Image 1: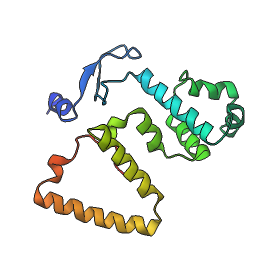
Image 2: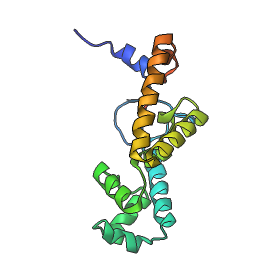
Image 3: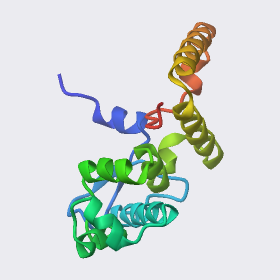
Image 4: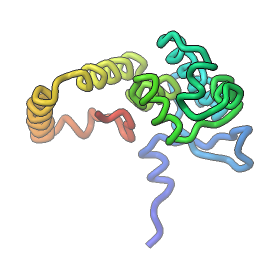
Length: 169
C-alpha cells in the first residue's frame, strides 16, 4: 500500500522549495525567517566554528594540526567553502569543547521550537541538563517521564508538542 506522502508533508510542515545547490525541488520546513538555502546554513555553521575557535583563543594554524588538517583545508570550513561531514563535526566538538546540538542550533534554531523564544528555551534547557551530574540527570529524567505521562493522561501533550521537533534532549 503506498504511503500518503502529502499527509506526511503536511504533518511535518514541509514546503516545496528550490535550492541553488540541488537540481530538483526539495521539501524543507521553514525557519523563523523563511527557508534558508543550504549555502546559508553552511555560512551559519562556518560562523559558529570560527567563533568557537576564537573563544578558545586558537588560531587556524594552531587548530588545524589538532584535526589532522592543513591550515588551508581547515580554513575552507570557516569560509563555508567546504562542507563539513558529521565525523569532522564530532572531531571539532572534541577539540573545541562544544556539543553538536549547539552547532546545529546556530544553523537551524527552528528545529528546537515553533518560535524563537521556545527554541532558545529548549536549547537552554538542553544545555543545563547536559551540565548536570549523572545522578541528577537520572532523577530529572524520571520526573520528566512522570510529567509527560500526566500530560498524556490529561490529553494535552500530543496536541501541544511540536511536530517533527528535532531538538529532543
